[in-house]
Amino acid sequence: MPTDTAPTDAEVACFEAGIKFGSLYHQFAGTPVSPDSAASLESAMEESIENQPHCSAVTVDVLTDELEAELAESTAEYTELTGRFLEVEIVVDYEGCEIVTRMAMEDGYPLMRLESVRDE
Amino acid sequence: MPTDTAPTDAEVACFEAGIKFGSLYHQFAGTPVSPDSAASLESAMEESIENQPHCSAVTVDVLTDELEAELAESTAEYTELTGRFLEVEIVVDYEGCEIVTRMAMEDGYPLMRLESVRDE
Amino acid sequence: MPTDTAPTDAEVACFEAGIKFGSLYHQFAGTPVSPDSAASLESAMEESIENQPHCSAVTVDVLTDELEAELAESTAEYTELTGRFLEVEIVVDYEGCEIVTRMAMEDGYPLMRLESVRDE
Amino acid sequence: MPTDTAPTDAEVACFEAGIKFGSLYHQFAGTPVSPDSAASLESAMEESIENQPHCSAVTVDVLTDELEAELAESTAEYTELTGRFLEVEIVVDYEGCEIVTRMAMEDGYPLMRLESVRDE
Image 1: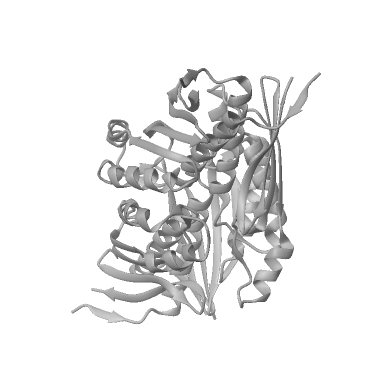
Image 2: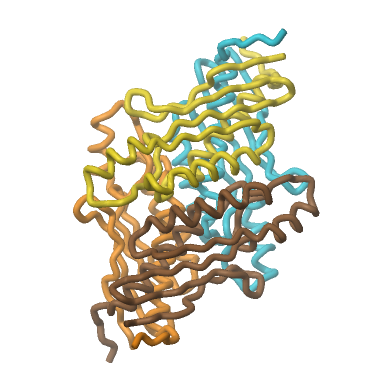
């Protein structure tokens, strides 16, 4: 029989980690970006999401090689930020649980994945 | 000694639920909203987030009483969507785990909370 | 010699029309969308931007044929809203000037264009 | 009798300036921000919008005094970016027309205003 339980600290930590990922992606997807402006966007994404509760580290890599490859095929000098230009790692600490999460492309889709759960 | 473990299904389910909440909030915060346009915004928020994987139900309530109270104090006819005008419930199903999450105001802040974890 | 002049009503009207277009695009780009959820998103986009000052009409067409074509080539059941799935017309009225603006794909890019300026 | 005319260069320039303002505001409104993360957000906002066509300069000032005043009244360490924490100037050049636009608070609202139109 299914049982309805109060969430564990590790489950709350995973929920918090998911909030950070969804926030980061949907706040910044669509931002105009070029190889020259990638660095300032990375910093802003990292520092803004690190403000959120229980978020101990955010590392954003805007893939300038991918940006340059896309722009080389067009007359445009910038494009919109989307998952295929991003690699992200977010670490959350909640009540002694450390959660490491990562986003990268897999089979053509940006996948957000729970890497590890460390419960002290 | 802390141990690093692969996430359980319930933990992944909680991570997925967090993604939906962060997505919903940061996609739609800032949208111009009035009592008359609240219903269409509710529907769009619900149906767009329900597209995301493992998301079985999204219920959005834009608090038109709160909107009207805010607009009564100003000359504006609309405002920007933010947490104090929202109540949201999101249900995620992942590998037999059902996660219920809710957002509402608490002590002046919009809090996202994991309500229950049901593991079959 | 260049002269610095106060803006005409028609110029202010064009500025206002541009604000509506930039707002609509950057508020909603990135929203998860599928053929089934396209209609509710169209309504929300129209009604939210019509709240903005001097905005008399917004018509949004989410191109479900284009969505279906993209989804047919993948295993995903939804994608993110972006310019190639959108046709938009926005009409602004400011001090008797009516501005009609339109966004559609041109040479592979979503172009926002000032269609006509009617000054009474 | 009203006449429907093709837009002048100055009118197109004003439309372009409006697009930049709407884009900037609705892309970044809702971003988590604190006094410590304000500088990186300013840079990202400036550089991303400067990517857009005909945009020659964007200057963003996140009002850290206002942020600090708001945070002093609460237990939170960050808030969401919104108009009352922003002053912005955007300059657009289109076919020899230089448009200067500015956003600042007026009577409790963030107003976007066309400052000057210089037609060479």
